[in-house]
Picture 1 (tube, helix red, strand yellow):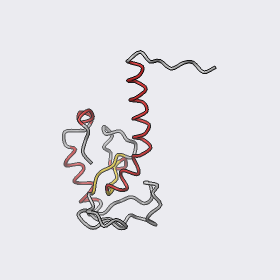
Picture 2 (cartoon, one colour):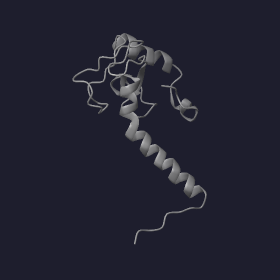
Picture 3 (cartoon, helix red, strand yellow):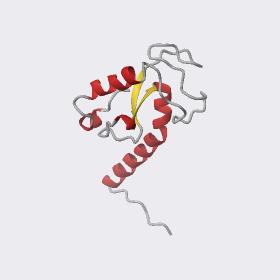
Picture 4 (cartoon, one colour):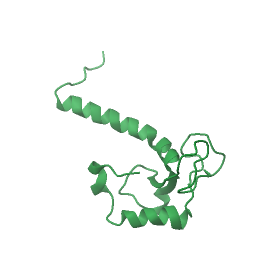
Length: 119
């Protein structure tokens, strides 16, 4: 998955090497998700392989490297998981919703639109 420009500085300089190692040396090109994604579409380990055909959709699989704690600075192997784009997107969905809500809240606050206290 592409790194958002505002997060680029949070990744170590050797991120391409780390990601390559996780996806192809450790995971042998196969998605390592065993249900963390919450999709409930595969029993056990996801069957998708990089550049292969995605089960269920037939789209081309792109293997990515997910940070399980959503912290790009934490590149310990136990925090990283090779995931197909489907599993990675599903895994990150709740975190993205939370981040978007926080960004909107901050923008409104910065524009002088403060929340009213609860009654």
